Length: 41
Image (cartoon, rainbow, N blue to C red):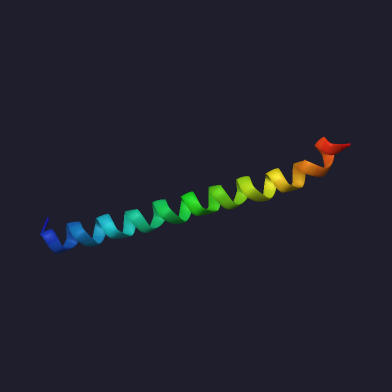
């Protein structure tokens, strides 16, 4: 595999990993906000 193709593959995988991490972080943030009013009662 040429170095260019390897570099493109690494960049695309890194973008997907960052996107998944941001989605997981946002989901954790919103779910904790949703659960807060229930825990205060």
